[in-house]
Length: 354
Ligand SMILES: Cc1cc2nc3c(=O)[nH]c(=O)nc-3n(C[C@H](O)[C@H](O)[C@H](O)COP(=O)(O)O)c2cc1C
Image 1 (cartoon, rainbow, N blue to C red):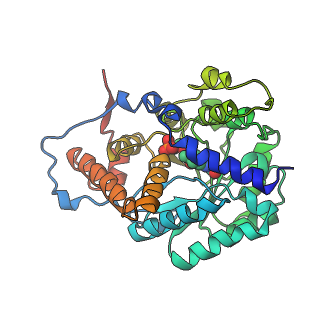
Image 2 (cartoon, rainbow, N blue to C red):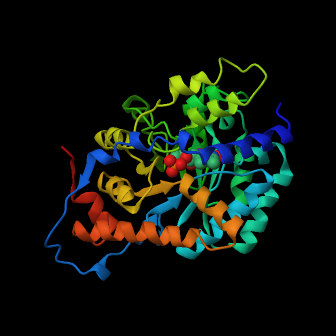
């Protein structure tokens, strides 16, 4: 069993390494293959464009969300506090980082009670890994949700990362069953997400009837967790599970792109909502994914960077980033003649770039 010091070092490594350009695969998202169709006569006014939407009946001011990142180490509280306050102010949904530590250390839940005091109205979704879910009693999962006062729960599935991580838990047998039981027991929406390797048609086809509220594709094209873990391994002196840092070179482009993952889902016409993340770096990227059918668009790494800059400089960085993303999305909507994201999703306002 991993001790808490080891856990903290791993989480801090993740934050530091995730910021480096060598773990980004933005060129592989395939977003550059998608073009929104410009309308020279949009017949709407810019101020008609509204980003407001609802998530499982809850109103949000935009279809963006801050995708699950860190938790459970000393730096995390400050990062999450800033993210939660910014999301509360802008009316964005926020996914918190993995709450795994709370399963073994009840003190860890204090991170959230303080954040909740300062951001009581933030719309927060909890987070736990599928390989943890498999071995965790449902009452313990309910406690994670209660600790956070969560409105929903992300379960992340990350087979590549768990393989390449020295301390990883690549045990996924029974995952579908665990998901079904969870969805049946929870009275809040459950969203299954990857962490940057996307979803195949075969995997997606197994998810019908599971009871999921949504799948967030989190495809290849942004932060790559194979690369992150390989870089951590490179710094180790002890032997690792199954190789060395060269695994990062072999598996550094592994995954199904964010765009391909979305196309895979839409072809299936699923009984769950489709969300998108993995390499979204502008409001135009988000607009393309909404046009391809996503209800929500999640962003991780740029928000980590921005939160850390805010902590370091004391200057406001998160709200300006959110504003910029929203402006870019609004412009994309206006120039395709769409006044809301429902129109953007349903009007076929995109084409493949030749
Ligand atoms: C520092 C960091 C920590 C992360 N930790 C988690 C996590 O605990 N749980 C999870 O579901 N995803 C986690 N992710 C993955 C993101 O939610 C997201 O799926 C992935 O980074 C792709 O988005 P991006 O390209 O915008 O970074 C983490 C991402 C970053 C950058």
